[in-house]
Image (cartoon, rainbow, N blue to C red; front, side, top):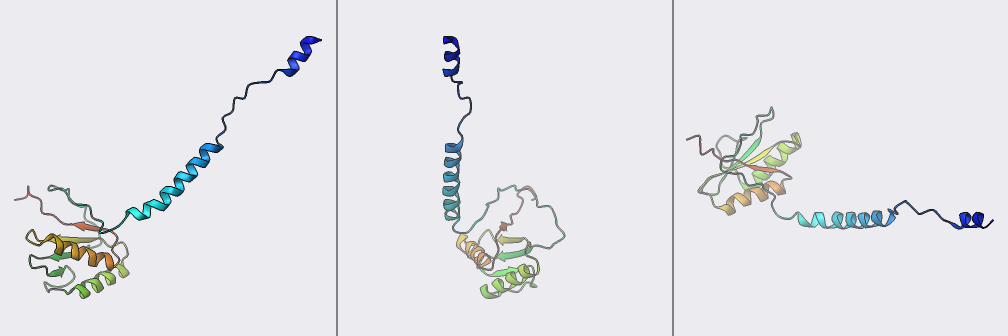
Length: 143
């Protein structure tokens, strides 16, 4: 009879892991990242190319190219070698994006143009609604 009582009082070991605290921690981390991620994206977003960058594969859509010369004047591939004011540039880009929201936009900066002039062009593009701007470079191995 004593053996029967000892069998009843023995308990099996718990083999399961309680994952609820881990889920709680993961949710807190997710909320922290969701709050801090938008705060980290400020300023003009650019990816500076290397000197010998690969060529971009041609697409059927003609990209919108803004050229900044050494004097800080703006030109576009949409106008025929005429200088474009900052307001006209902004309107032209907005119209091009309205026709095709996925249109690629590139900035061609003269090597003698100041960094500030090129950044000013990029800020104008950002105000016009361009999310992604590419920089056009010259291949040094071509010459």
